[in-house]
Each structure stands twice: as structure tokens, then as C-alpha cells.
Image (cartoon, rainbow, N blue to C red):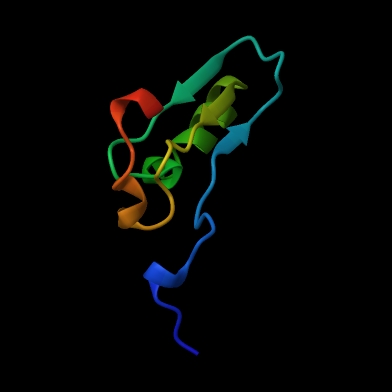
Amino acid sequence: MVVYASKITQFLVGPIELGEKNAAITFFLIHGYTGTPYDFNKLPQYLHDMHGARVRVMLLPGHGTTISDLDHISYEDF
């Protein structure tokens, strides 16, 4: 069975959270336009491992699904 991206209605990716909430260091990473948290590759895990830090990578509204989900996003959504 072939599933085309335009038929998918759920998130293909999600936010990344590593580490404890009470960590001494927190890194908050934000991906670029049309990107996803996975654009950072191994950086979140590296920051967590090297610094014992909490690392949070958000998923911006309209991202992580299909490109057409960005059609109705405006600056007010951020």
C-alpha cells in the first residue's frame, strides 16, 4: 500500500525533550522555517551528554506534517 504525504493527517515528527527539569543548564533549540526538531541531528543528545543539560527542541505550528499545513499559518501563531 502506498501512502502519499497529502493523505497523512498526523504529525510525522514531534518535539524533543532530554534531561531533567531541574538541570543546572537548559538549551532551548528552535528549528527553521519548514524544518523540524530533527534538523539538529545529534546536537540535542550531544548537549545533554556533554553538559548534563536539559535540552528542549520545539515543533513549530504547521511544521512536522505536510508543506500544505503551512498555508494557514501567520506570524501570530508564533
